[in-house]
Image 1 (tube, rainbow, N blue to C red):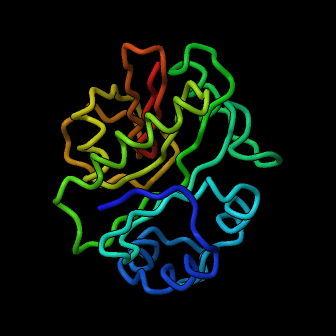
Image 2: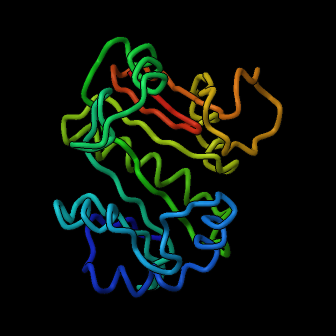
Length: 202
């Protein structure tokens, strides 16, 4: 498996239309603004703004997974898209007052390729990639048990969002609300955050 930064947008859209497992997952979340089978307007905008914000996983030249990321801060997900008060306060608390960060917007690996260590390899790659680009923090919102397990194994700490209703995780942690927030602290003064599960390196 190879991890590649950037991809032709037309090729990526063709791949995205084939992700039935992702689109079924979106349906379980009750996402009203998703055009099932199509790349979202927000996601396409992120990629068009900077093609390096799309990272794809390839095996035998087949695209088998992807990640979309963008710059953010504790006040806004993206420019013009403000965070609510609970999210802002939690991020500031977890990041020790740091304002700027990278948001890992979407991560997906085709179901048939899971369980092979590819998720772990991606997180190792992404943490190094972001660090080399000069960023100090990453935030990632998810309710995916596999992503959560990877972050737990990497030493991520946990906290919870009260307002979200997406989490379907085992009751390993104290639940303070409807959604799980996980934060991780590394020794290399770098942050990585995962939320409806949220992770932070510092």
